[in-house]
Length: 157
Image (cartoon, rainbow, N blue to C red; front, top):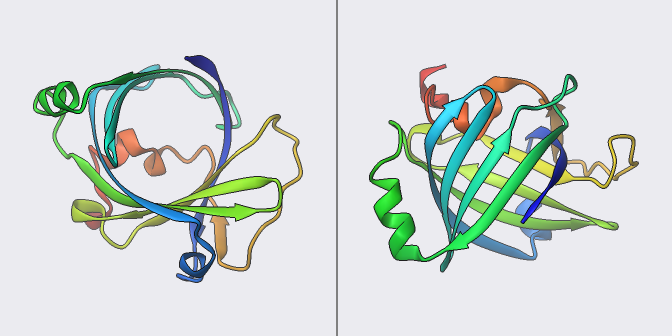
């Protein structure tokens, strides 16, 4: 499935989001390609697996092309063996907020200590609620992209 992904990213100040979370899922993902103009990601999310290609972000960092297809978990495990250096591991919390859903990623392993919240929007100027636990906006800051965290993990900053 292809679409334009419009999202904003924020650091998270407290763990209060956990009390509001509707679900939590363990994610393991790696990157077959982290070129600035395109990334190719393999992800195992719970008991499902996906292959995703993302294009380059626009100037504001909010919008980019995304294509994704479901693959078998066995295929994903084999592809992860081919991925670049650091394999990302995280717990994703889905936190409802009005008509939107925040996805809060609590990173593990090489990126332990980093917590990022993302909200997907229908258009760039869309109004959305900002919970008290939300911190500084990092939309468009490339060092917070998952593809970059796989090359330059948080623990090395």
